[in-house]
Length: 469
Image (cartoon, rainbow, N blue to C red; front, side, top):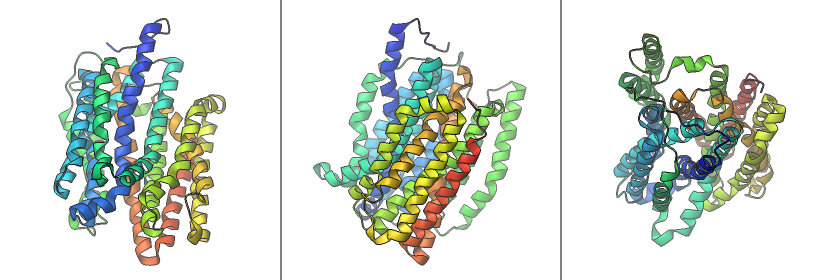
């Protein structure tokens, strides 16, 4: 039975609010581990004698496995209990973080990162699904706001945390500390996991293995070539994989539609979810906003360190105003959206684009004078307005999703987010690296930032079609 919390049960409500930091900690760790590696890539490559392609696999392996397992993880939680899957996923994430931290070679690090992504794919869908199943009304809105704030904070704070850890060089661990820091946090989360309420969609239904394989194959053929094709100079298998994506994706859609209509097996991702306008239009916003975020974070990390010669810590400090702006907006975004409706999200996307455009102009006209302090205004604007998009977006998409399919809907949304982040890193990153190699770091950064501005502007247009309230 799905667990709900009526307002007339203050003890149960208090327990639910104590559980929220536990599940949000897991969400934060999963997001941070996607971004924190950016500032450590030069150190990893030098220490493990890994070439550019192998280093790129350290990033891509986690993101690819994570994206491929999210919907499956959501369905497993729906069927067999969300707390059970959350605990298993968090335990596996903690263990694989340890394996990453002690990896002796690039190959073992890549393998551990893939397993870490699988663990995150089991753990993360339970966070959003538990919020959907546990809270109703205004408490759900507040919880979803904190969820969005956690994702945003993890996205922009990952590189700052990485820079601080590399600078501290705790016990001489160097880059390994960015993974080892997850171990005590994960253990603490496991001890506190008893606070997480158990919920499920009802009687266990078989997970759809055919749908899971088709979805994982589609995402793998899309994200794999996009992530490593540039470093490998686009061999034939990467081109063939991208060509096969539309065919495999169509096969997945037809299979899921047939499963839902036939009723003989539970579809991995029910097509009926997209009949809800908020879900359909919200996914469109996510597929434009998150590539802009992922592309920007990659461009800034590489440009700051390789183009400007900043240390990892200095590069992280450059992002601090963005993180601060996002956190400030996360505290008030829901109230703004409650008063202004969809216009607030549109303004957020437009303001985010303006902040990135201001940074691009700074790079173009003041390249020699750039410093963490000089980019503060543009970063602060991007963070404030970006928070006005991300924080309410999850609530807008999931507000009318029924609890029995909360796990599937949560998995679909976070899959879209993760796939879009990875696609943004791959596509905007490829453009940035290609232009930088040909015309210099300044031109590459301006080009990459301009691409992110266009994506954010498209996000504003898509957000205008969200349900008005």
